[in-house]
Length: 277
Image (cartoon, rainbow, N blue to C red):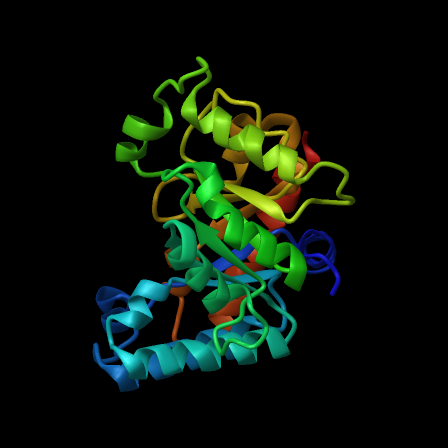
């Protein structure tokens, strides 16, 4: 299978550098005039996928908002993944899994094994049980042509307590993780398949983000960052940034055309910001 990094580069170049989150939390369902139940979840998800999957580069369902409805919610998620991929969007499952040994292997199989009903183009993972604990996911992703996005410097303020601490060799812990990611991407072209999650709200990230891989940038829109902030955070690596917007687009639903227009505006703003670098 064509590596995820290659497919992502092509998708961003042709559809625009934008990831739209699918986050059906209760308040957003209410804003759409939907009940916080399985019927509301199904309608919200169907409208979002039908409106955006044929035009945005990446759709990022947040697994927790589906899991809270139990097996019926997971069934909605499975269908969304299948239909989004069929329409040409890359699906990044936002699951933030992290564990060790056989448990990590099971998480990897859930999202990165083509035989799984939740098989996605990529998944988010946490490295803070040690980067080596991610090996089952990294190996399976390489085998299946999928991607892995590793938490590095997240947009939540509490993250700095761990991510900005100093590793045993004196490097910031986030930099240690980024260096591991860079090693995984050695020799990949045009883009590696191991990406980092780096918040767009950070200002100067203060680390080397040149990992030869994609940089998922949450925080644009409701969290306060704008596309114009991206060059200041990511510097010369900004062309590999995948900006992630959720509520900034989703708040325009349930009207499908309004969702499309909002996504197109963000993509245009990102292109303009990158062009200035």
